Length: 486
Image (cartoon, rainbow, N blue to C red; front, side, top):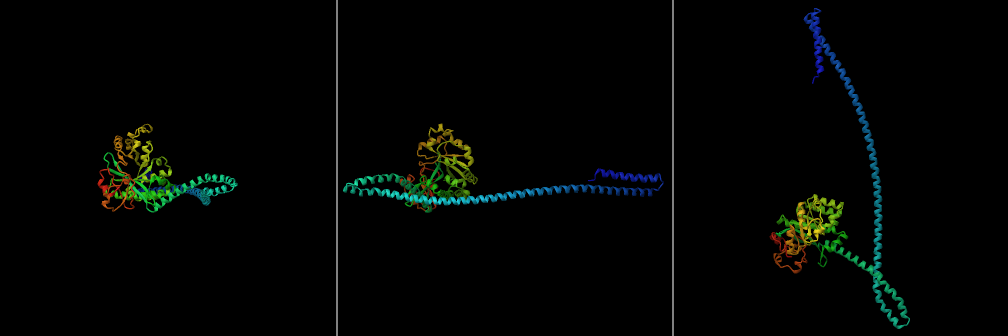
């Protein structure tokens, strides 16, 4: 856009040239043509002069700008050089820190190797001491049998009683000293044998799943199943979970057990969902698996592969596990919750809950024993009356499940507490899975007395199906098709 000063200068030049021509025409008496030529020449000269002066002025301005740009470029180059120097210093520090870390790591590795050697030496020493203690126990057991050989000598010669009396105190003093280590050895060996039996059962596919239904109240319609783990030894004797879980955790086998149980539960859930999309399965997970990164990673990979079943697959933990969560356990729970899995709390010992915190962690079910809910002393020891607990948990999306229900009277009282779900021997005991393809006649045979108590010994291996609860209704057709005799 043309500036106002340029327009003003152009007007002034035109006026000056016109005035010069008019003066020459009127004063000097020059003709009009000559006066116009002179005026046009003067205008041309003025235009040329103005163009040259503007060019010189612009050149000086551009020169100043170039000088300013050169100074800015020099400052920028100086700053870049300073940043390069600082970056080189930081890289030198990082390299030195890495080298120091590598040296420390090498030192730690060396110390670990030394500790490993010391542990091996200690194990060797302990083994030798155990052998010595076993030898001492054997000698102690043999010592009393050798005593009658001394008594005949006491009868044959008068000096023998003195010798027997001198030998008696050592014989009597040995057994107390050797008996206590012998007992410790027996206990240790029994623990070792139990761990070995658990490992053999896992390798031999003798971990069996029993299912116990959870029903809606008061309709008593089967809504969920809880998977209960049982172990069979080499003689097909049933070992309950409470009897081998501690030894499995001590022997480092609980991760394999939990992974196997998850696999079986997913198989059962897939078979059930073919016939009923609303059914779900509760699977118990130990605190040791939740806190062990290696075992949990294996279970997490399996659960990630079966993420589509997350809405119907509930992971169950003990109340003590949630109350003693560490950073690792909290991170693992968050990883499961992010993948859509829901949690349940069992083994509840008191009614002190933080529903908001539990809901934020992904808990959607809490299983409380019916006797604990109906205990009148709980109203004074807990923060809320048991009759209001179901409504309180429901505000945060948590369902209350009353477990271990064994009588109709308890059901009536629990309905007053607005409990929505129930579980217990009143509805059905835990029943073993049976292999697929069992005959219908076998399913029609009456249950044995020990099976009615949840202690059936006919434990199938693969392709699990489940027994129907005898008193539950609503899913009876599904149960008859999926389960076998209790």
